[in-house]
Image 1 (cartoon, one colour):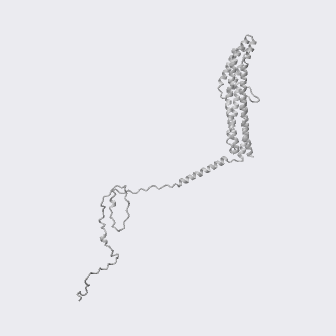
Image 2 (cartoon, helix red, strand yellow; image 1 turned 135 degrees about the vertical axis):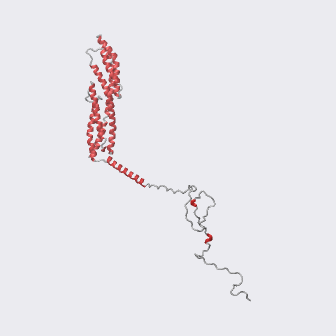
Image 3 (cartoon, helix red, strand yellow; image 1 turned 180 degrees about the horizontal axis):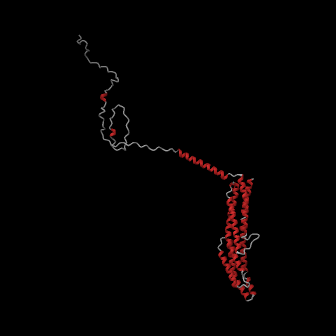
Length: 356
């Protein structure tokens, strides 16, 4: 017989109650039990050198979203406010420099093109202008060479320099004509047509010959002026001999001549130096001979006097030979300067041809 009270559950184990479905108002866990009181922040349990007031903010609970925090700056001392970050300077663009470099190259290229056009572009008019200028240069060259020839002893109408004034005028003519010739060449050097390839080669050959001519003319004229001046003083000294000369008179005349020669013996030109040396050697050899000669004439022993003069023959021949050798070598050197005439004519002909 059932003894269980009416409306009571049967005796025995009680079945579990059904678990309610989780809802927003009925979460699956006790929020109150899991949350941390924000009024009681969690403090770090271990002191840290990086700990500061900035790190005492409430710590989020597990599972709750965390706000991003600034990284700890190891350069900030404990308790000090962090310094604002330093922004590095912005990098400058290299494009302006690149454009400036390109612009400079372009300008240089333009300048080079202009220079090339102005310097090397040669017109018919340039050739005509240069060709016309050659006539005056040819005239000045001829005048210079003719005045130089007069003091080389090679002229067809060779003057006799018997006075120092004549020597001075001859030297002045050489210097003046050479200067005029040089001035004309300096001006002609600027002719644009000379940059022509063919003409330039011919003109280079001429300038080599021209420079040699100027050097020869300058050094030769300087030496000739001194040597001829000394020789002229000798001529003037012996010209004033008395009607009845004596050895004393001869000695005075010779002393004047010899002093002039000695003063000029250090000339630079080798030919004129050789001439002066031969002249002095002759005077030294003639001295004793003329002493015997005048001794014979004074005693009226003319046989002895003229016999003495024969002793002078070797010295006279030596002087004549040396003088001729010097004169021949000067003539040869002068003849070599003909190349300025032929080489400049080649330039002139080339210009005339290109000007047509």
